[in-house]
Length: 297
Image (tube, rainbow, N blue to C red; front, side, top):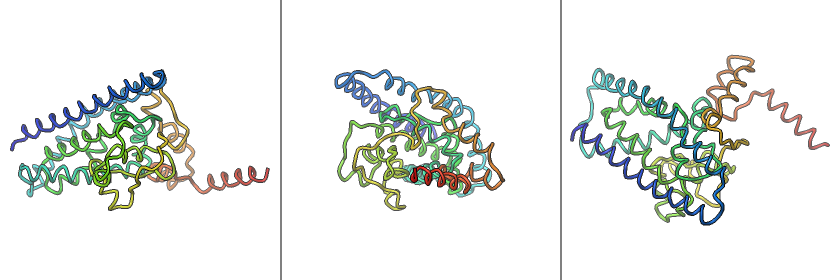
């Protein structure tokens, strides 16, 4: 097995799921046309989703090239326990990438500076195949960095990036409402039903089902939630823009405002590296006062 063979295999895998996604998208559009008027806002939301590929691919093309070269340099210079390229290590690389993706994904929801990128993916009030390509500009770069431990474990860079691509390509088909529950598969794989939960902003669905290919990581680490009522999609806060520029940078105005009004280095740290919902005590006290006034009036 050679790096060229692995690259070709990755391309084939990506193409298969692209074709599956394209077929589902075609059915989604036809269903919309025949069941209700094709709403202009829905179309513009799809365009906004596709538009996120512009900054994403620009960043990916330049920065990921340097990241890959860096991975190769570290592997060649410092890692003497590099694994061989075999079918076994290929499978293990995908499994390891899937575990790494779970934790990367979970961190992206719980660390605000990372959430600024991943929130782009969650900012649509719809669920369709094109939401699957709705990415923040730096998500690919962050993903590569957070998969760096796989290099230290001895996986060759070509296998690490193969694993990343396979996990992401798999998720193309799960962004849809066309496919219902799949029985036992919902307990093992990240299926459309499981991923609809992940995109729900209902309280019971928030921060659930982080898995990439396998949903068993969520079951192991206590973040699994089965689909019950139909999710309400989008961000928890009131956000429903179809302006591409607003979608690309939806979280940054809030971050800049909070950074500007930080009263200490500790608060600044928490504004950037705390949870997205973190607030200083003074804000909570002000909210409590407002709630008390409203309840007494």
